Image (cartoon, helix red, strand yellow):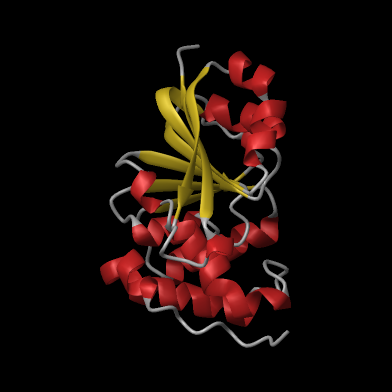
Length: 213
């Protein structure tokens, strides 16, 4: 497969609006440095926009003004992308690996993202218990492992907005006990991007409200 960066899809204008120049700058930075820093593989460049940038940005309309945590931010997918798309939302990017934290902090500076804080921590050790309005995560782990480290960060009445793969329904079935334990209400799966991105690149989101503890 070619290692050439995927041309910017025309739909990016619709998704990012006036924030498109920042999204473009971030995509180019990932293309230049992502492989050498171990953030993305070389085979991802020909699909960087559709599989990663737009895939992450499709979650932006689900976020509310307030404080959103992104667990395991890694390359900034979805955290940096969402912060670009939603300048009205305050983000805390939670990432334990030093070199990834350095990358995230560099992107925050270079993109001049005033709505982002970066925290070096594992989610279970982050001093944010019950402080966040919403929490998101992408490609971190299965729900039965992910929910115990994300749900405690969310205030009562807040939401989990977790990006998942095609097997999300099976993950939900395997996590039934965990969903009850953390009093998650109205769990649902949303499919975002149909008719906007290729069918193979739609975004699936597990969304649930965190109940009173």
